[in-house]
Amino acid sequence: MGYVDLHCHLLPNLDDGSPSMAASLELARDAVADGVSHALVTPHHLNRRYVNHKDAVIQATSDFQASLNESGIELTVFPGQEVHLSNKILTALDQDDILFADEGGRYMLLELPSNEVPHYTKSMIYQLQSRGITPMIVHPERNNELVAHPERLADLLELGCLSQITASSYLGTFGKDVERAANLMVNAGQGTIMASDAHVMEKRDYELGAAMRRLAKDLGRKVADDYQQNAKDILNGDPVRMTWEPIKQKKDFGCFN
Image (cartoon, rainbow, N blue to C red; front, side, top):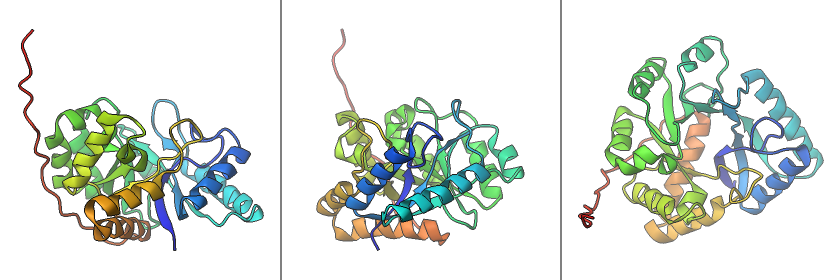
């Protein structure tokens, strides 16, 4: 079994991930070449641009799997969503319009706005947990508030959330600042899994394999193996445990102008 990728935008014509089936198949070939064998396909849902209803994603995933099989691409895909933090989530849950990382409805990929942690975030997490749902915060290293105030990610982890670090962030594809944030989180044990967040666009290629190799080099094979085991456990709906510590921020005394 190859890598399990729990966050990617492979489905065509649903969001900013891929403009066509041909482009999706090419990205899927890249995934397989990168060592991925199983992928949770996660179009955006409930953000300001995209609403991808559960039934439509399930059908699109089935169609995509058929095209993968016809093309001889050895990738198994599962339907999912990248759910944007919104006051619409609870209504969508009541309407059975949310897809999870697992079939049992235990793990939800939750995206925060890129610039902030909204004031109602903890309240929403409590409400999700009351329904037996564990949120997994996606790409926290690209959230400006979480990076500037590491204690706020620690607060979310303390509540029982999981976190997904993006492979390209860890490798520096999005720049040194994002790379530094990703490394601080990983080194503190604050990452649960690594995922590609792959799109058909510049700087959004498949780099999961390279990130996992670097993780093994930097922190040891066991840590890299744990990341992949966590991904498998989440896909199966099994328990996942994290051992993490707070990020120690270096004080910047700077100069007064």
